[in-house]
Length: 320
Image (cartoon, rainbow, N blue to C red; front, side):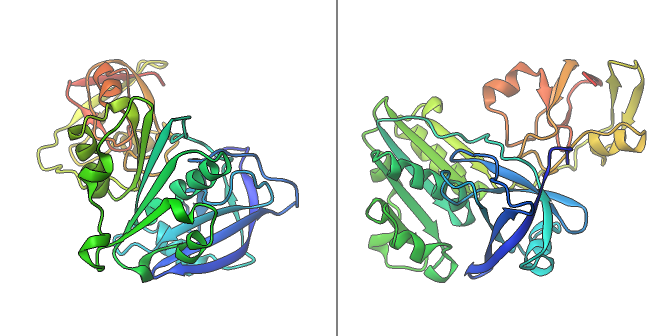
């Protein structure tokens, strides 16, 4: 994490739902935290040397605290377990200043679709839209009420009347009718979706089928789908600044191969979701495996995510 990281204390840790904890963070020195906008996240240094991204889910007008929420994931690579089991109230941890790859745009009407823990950035968006008295609806989909973070908070909020809860375990009439919800989109309408990969893909494909354009659809993944790596082959990367070429093994990431040679690339999520490791490609054709770039950005082949993406060409020349 860079030198401008912030030292914060966990002033409150709270169980928000089954397997979901929230963490309220304040600066150790008591100064105001950097301002942030709806959709922002921070990189958190998790005990054990991991760095993970968590969306800010408190009101963007607040500067005395940040709040994040973390799902304890059975398939965790250490991040969520570290936050749930190791981080306690009173602990001091380091975070980055806020970053926003998922900004809220002004719109005539806004639809927010949250799947599970994907509610965190959308909760902040709903708070902002309610403050602006904008026209919006938050659709919050979870397995059951006991797995629904911030349920009581939302029911008591200024946007309670603009929120619809959809529980998998609930009666049919309260489940999300995606086709009806997406019907009648106008050019001034915007859609935001966050949650598991399958949920996002369902909302996005349904929106496109209903006539929504790519420019109207905004998404943020919380984790990448597993990649089939059985056909992966070795290739080379060339560092433009030194002219040196390094081999990347069939079962090795570009980041790992370069780290073995003393060339370090800053990473965070390690699965092509966050954009931290983006590197310019000067020559060659990347094999894009990230969830970060749009199709148009991938088609340019001028940058890639070396934490997970590979090469279709024999060599990639990197702007390093």
